[in-house]
Image 1 (cartoon, rainbow, N blue to C red):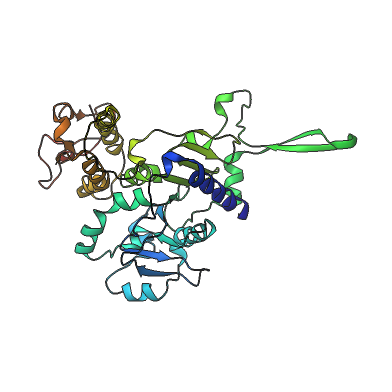
Image 2: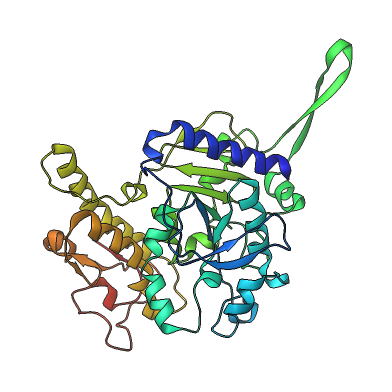
Length: 368
């Protein structure tokens, strides 16, 4: 709805004008190699080459779905057509609505992996996938299609889905001048006396399909601002705070050192910089444990799906990356083991992939 999109725009404006921790860039970032120009309407969308241009842009975090339900992609043969115009089909509803949201936020450019990377070019995929960390880290905001199983289900849940998820309750109450009125309360479950059952989507009781994808961990971790479109409500997370439709006051933001923009350390002369590096080394194993519990379509993506985070970490620490481990913390990071409390089986990957001392050499979740 227009009201929801205006609310999201107000969250973004508030963040850009008053959150010091969220606004570390001194100028607009360089655009990724290719972006979608969302134009002024759905008939005015096209793929374009950035060619060194600086501007704000939006990124999309979405689920690809099964092979039979793939949305539009860019290939070698379709690149020129995409640069003339793009018409989204029924399989690409999420992309179409992401363009609507981008325009509503007052931003001209949108980056979607399946359209901005040439999917049948190994050279282009290899080059552009290595930039993913920087692409998400420099985006103004990332839209998360949290309610959708695939790109055909859209970014915006419909009103019926929201109502069913909320379990609205109508309560009669006195109105003005002796009249009878009513209020509607959402969030009640079957036992409204149990406050633990009150729903709040940012601590949802069930995982969304999107949150189980291995590739998404670097998208949500590196993006300075996330705007989630869940079934129940829309909610926001940035480096400073979290917001949602069901609360007037903002909440505390989930802590993540990786949301900071890239910055190079000229020297580690201050205690704060030294502590920052220590904290990064502490946070990496936590990310690995989370990542290895997520799904990957291809086993060979076990390291590429973290390449953006690894690139960010390498720039910050100037350390050596060793197949999922860091030389500067190698003594501790070698102490991983296969988590046996889950039902998942662990096995070495079929093809030689990583040294046996790396967690990337096996399938399934690991811990330390």
